[in-house]
Amino acid sequence: ETLLADLQARRLLPLHPCLLIFANPPALAERRRYLKHNLNRLFGAPMLPASVEGQRARALEQHCQEFTELYGPGWHLDLHSTIKPSRHARFALQPQRNHPYDSRWPGVLAQAGFSALVHQHSPAHTFAHFTCNQLGHDSFTLECGDIGGAAASGTNTLEPAQQTAALLDHFLRQLLTGPDLPATSPDGPVLQQYDVVVDLIRRSAGFRFHVDEQGENFATFAQGTLIADDAGQPVTAPVDGCALLFANSQVPVGDRAGLLLAPSLRTG
Image (cartoon, rainbow, N blue to C red):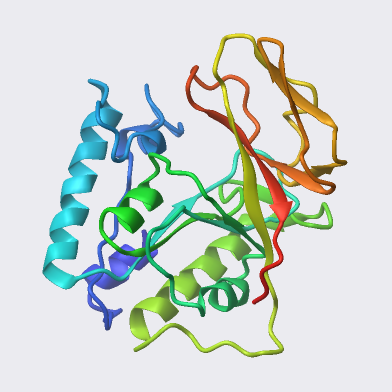
């Protein structure tokens, strides 16, 4: 909101076309993630529900399409807050994509205070996947910690929400006012990168986890550990050090109940 106020008052003059979106205002007003349907599972979907979120998804698709037609592709940062502690207080997810991204992004994200980057390899109905694959943007979902209170860091200490908000504000202002992506130092922080190796889809009402789904994001398990089963079909950790992200057994049947990650060999 401070960034928006500064843009409206012309205290901040961006060098790039800028579209700021509050994705789900009715849910924000009620301090809920969504009212009826998870908005970030509706983008690009062939059939949309007759709900506030369904209408909003279609409207945002149209706005982004028109914006891209006017100014061309650039970058899209979809800011989220997590609902449980994480071993990486702030992390990014890169959607499965059909075009190469600017290779400087990992360094830029690390410099901005993100400590992990998750590479997805399957299509999804997320906002970032839509703007990446339908509109050609370099798109990321940025999980920015629990900015409503405090987030658990890698050392299990509590990070004040004000520090997170200040880091994000500085990062966004850098992106908007610089002629290019911010310069990074070769001696700067390095992201831990991961690849999604299993999309845990809840295929039946019998889906259940065999590990603590209330545990931290990025909790790791040995190869062969029983992670979940779906009506008797077991899902085990395919590699040593397999990390579990976004575990939630209560999603609707057909939705993603979590991601299993393997540490990536990528550098940078």
